[in-house]
Image (cartoon, rainbow, N blue to C red; front, top):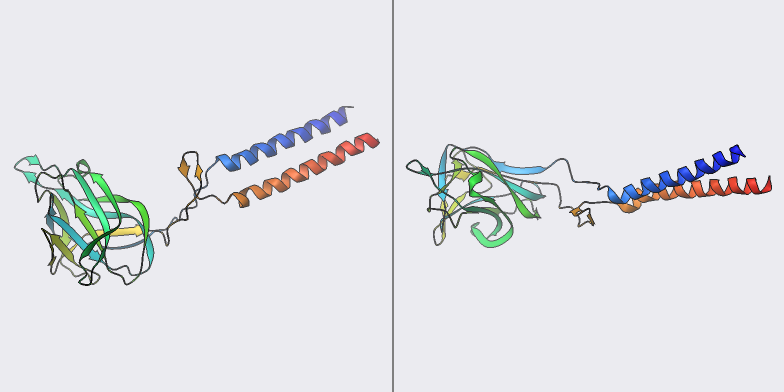
Length: 240
């Protein structure tokens, strides 16, 4: 009698354990994002150009390999009016296509923004996450356009630049029209995975790439084996 009860308890316990693991498969998110980003950039600097209000700056660049971009890094600081810091307001960074002259075309592929209080009076690398992932093609010229329309002045934000030569693009400034700043390039880095992740289902309020079939199938097999084993145990009891 005790042996029969013991087998029944073990059988029921195994069923509950398998159901618990099966439920965790759906509740626990699995993040399959790439651990290694691909980046392009230019990181030399010695001086600054300024932007703010209707005055913008842009750095064109050419990816050396096709890859996705999820964020941009710029080396920025803010200006001072005497001892008072200039307030940049909202700083927006956009990745745009370029026209036949390799100037920013105005067609925005993706953009991101940061609050001006993230920029200090000393040079600092600032990361700007784009609102969506975009995929860039190797050998195609793109533009990073920086603006601060609500800044205290047209020269509120410093973007640090170098003159060591970057073959993939150049610095541009805008005051009613784009003009090239020949011989200068602004500090920038663009990074992302090899390609943008596929749209995935929402789990727990966040989006995670999850292969449900691959995760659930082993537990279905285990569950079926437990049921089959329980059926054999019950059948033996009936015939004993």
